[in-house]
Amino acid sequence: MPTTKPDSLDLSPSPDDPTLRGLQAITDEWIRTVGVRYFSELTNLAQLTEEVGELARLISRTYGEQSFKESDKDRDLGEEMADVLWVLICLANQTGVDLSRAFRERLEKKTQRDRDRHRNNAKLSA
Image (tube, rainbow, N blue to C red; front, side, top):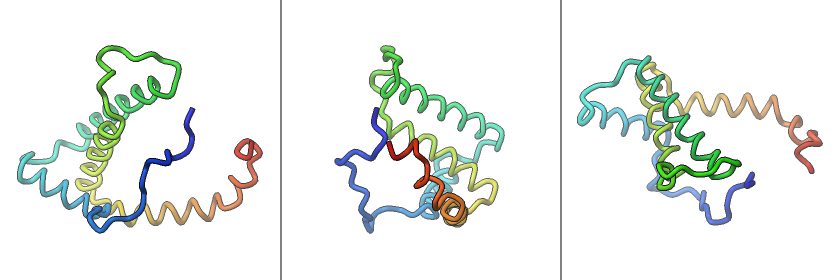
């Protein structure tokens, strides 16, 4: 069961990669020009739950013990993750959350809280 990034995944920064704020702007522009308007927050929360369920289903079949159903065989993990991200960005936009700022603040909090916790966890060093 994989628990680390595959060697084939290149995570080096590229000037063409949008930032979280850029993704929020791109999403907002698409919603306003193609999508007409945002769905309500409650509808988007339901959509987010649905998309996370689809992602969970694919992961459980890819990395867990469940076998694939015919309808799951052509699903793409990246597409399912992008669907989750899309709805999350929609929710952030319509509730006024700056995801870049929120992520930076959360990372700082996690770093302070977990700096030694994971290093000292015997379960992780095995």
